[in-house]
Amino acid sequence: RKPEYLCNASVQEYYVYAADRQVKPDAPRRVQAAVKRIDSNSPKKNASSSDWGVRKNFPMTDQSVATYRWAKGSPPIQARGMVLAGAVLFVAGPPDVLDELQALANPDDPAVRAKLEAQVAALEGRKGAQLLAFSAADGKKLSAQELGAMPTFDGMIAARGRLLLTTTDGKVLCLGAQGESLPEAPDAALVPLDTSIKAPPPAAPAAEAPAAEGPAPKADFAAVTRARVTRSELGYLVHGM
Image (cartoon, rainbow, N blue to C red; front, side, top):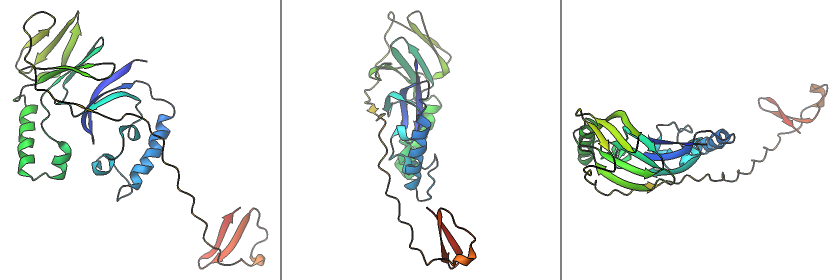
């Protein structure tokens, strides 16, 4: 089974990962059980996908049916192009300068607003771009280089030992073993994310049934089978046995 490699955004901010293409049969049940735990921690008892304040406290495997092989968080770029070339995964895109969680929590903070403006400039291609190389096997970052211009969306391919990509300033770059090297990008450590599947916590003991308020008159029922009937202020309560 070949894995798929993606760069995504969620309550973990942006992350790049490898996951199996096929969903395991027990994965939907695993996530359904996790959703109940997530909802129970929400003030509304219904933690929607936008309820990041609740969801960020739960692992990725509680929120996705994917079986991850590895995942790395906080990459320094937002991916606009990805190519798997043998054992190396190439990812290219503009800088990611904004902490989305901080921006959601403090949207009016002057420092956050400055970062928002910088992120807009980056997405418009005014902050350059980087090309990252990862090991496809374990996600280890192999290199980071400056491209000088933002790549066009999905405009990167690998062929005959070379990497070719187009940029928004109208250029076509051909990268390989020969030729002038690209400038190295500043070092940025990616954060390994927990992709293990944890056992759900033990279920809470069932609550005891409320005490009966008294037996119901037998004359009110022709027959009662495998049940116990008691009287209440609203009528009768039927307890299965």
